Length: 158
Image (tube, rainbow, N blue to C red):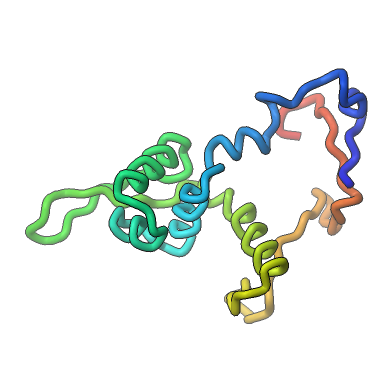
């Protein structure tokens, strides 16, 4: 269990509603189709029709998800034009979108572990060894879930 520290320890004296990073993240990518669009972007999908087909959603839903993810700064539009065709947009990961990858890979690993019905594995492209998602402190130590604390930082980003 994660320990709440300082003022956070008195759970009745504060509310995380509207200020919790989990809540804010879920507000951006909390739908199944949004997470699957992000998965496809990580796999290299960039074209509208490919997102719709690979995620298995309607074109209207694809348009809505892509617009939301662009507005959130996770994807960016880039124009492209096939010879003899009109100009269109493709969707590419931004730095912010790429930074979401560990969240998606943690979900991948959790689903693989608890549903176990997939041959898919994450691996290190350089050496081929199986890869995992881990929590580490700034000093490089692996941190188990029961060793985590949530505290209020005096400075933002710390």
